[in-house]
Length: 629
Image 1 (tube, rainbow, N blue to C red):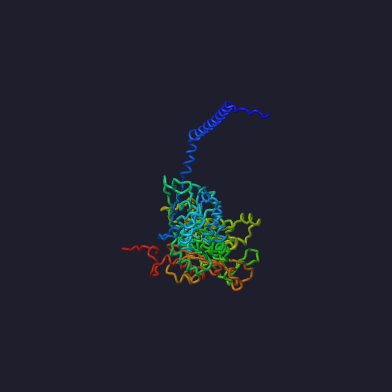
Image 2 (cartoon, rainbow, N blue to C red; image 1 turned 60 degrees about the vertical axis):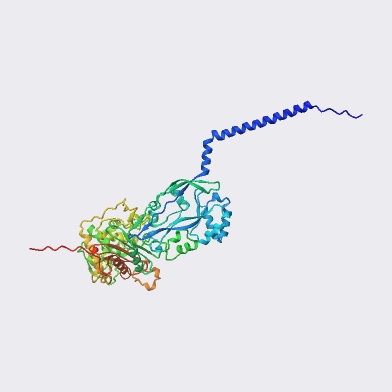
């Protein structure tokens, strides 16, 4: 029999539907409550927090880097300028897959793997979030057009105009003004992160580095409103940056060029300063280099050529070059000998062509092997007699020599604003014991008396010691800056003047230096004979390789770079010093024959007028005549 068909229970079905509907409604109500609770929590309880986040996403503070101060010579000619240039920047946060964008950029600009590696290296350097990083400077019009056409493929890449440092006289002031370069990771850690926001360059050498704080200025900023892609919609607040202060140097462009020409392409150094003020008038280190190469990033090939050059163009010979002073130290030794009482102006020493220590067979030779006979202090300076100064050094001893030479700045930094200056070396008993674990020998004292041996000086130290003789012991530190922001720099660590028992000692030594140039037996009489004013000077020769006992110096048997260095120091006019000059010609051999003419050319350019006559303001004061009734 067929099964009976059960009838549908409509009441049960209706109850089930009502239960499901109630459950669904309850679930929806719960979700609505949760949603409103969440909205209340976010919009009411956390209102301040999210309002701040929203504002930060919409409003950004962008730094405005200050304009770097300019550098001028003493006559107002620009030595370091700011030149407008178009640069290519990339913001990694806005570029997304920035390495892929970099690949497209290299392809668009048709660069190779080397340039791409350099771009990536710059992007990976230390920086701040959302800060555009310059990766290419001085874009051409074609490069700008290519970037504009392919902008849709280059998110985060922009062409921006900025001021780039430029040195119009290039290699002429590379070692004095210096140059700026990109800030590296180590420098970024010690710089003020706020003040250097948006700044990518800083001073690396020279005046650019020493006066970095003054030249840089103070950063400004803008509060800007941006869209979701970071594009600026409007400026909400603007604070102008404070530009860097201008620096006026004491250097003279015309004198600098004359000094370089006088050196004639030879390796060497020239420094000229005013004894009364310490202002450096010319500072030449040859060979030199173009500092503009370092501003936007020098190529590996160009840097390797400068770094590996046998002539060392990057080496500042004026401040870093260490050379035995040779006989240029004898005027300072003469002052020391007079003041210590071991000699008097009337003291005479017999010179047979050599000097011997008591009980020692070794002969310390005079440059004149035949000897000069009986020699006074004046003759010893004018003839550069070694035997006289051997005798003086032996009587003084190393301890007193060290004391006096350090007063003249030997073995010390003497400048006010040249941070690269080397200290040089004035040896002492303690120094040798510490360095070589040996006692000091009497023979070392003798050769130190003629500027040989362990003593090492820079051309800057030599010109300062010469200026001290011209100033009669008054200490004024050499400086490059005449004014910074309109005010002269202040010496915060003045050096005591050199005090001697009798001021006439200075006159005796100065007169001996005059005789070098203007007496029949002076070593530089040929140069002095053509001068239109009185010069006080002293020649010197610094040995590069040692000569054995009994042998003679033969330049023909030596390689050019093994020949003696030629030095000369002097000041003029002798009665009213207006300029002091030190010249060092590497492997020039003759101080009187090679370096002295260079000194005179520099002095002529500063002291003579267009007619070749001594300028009236530099003429020595004429004594007034007293008329008798």
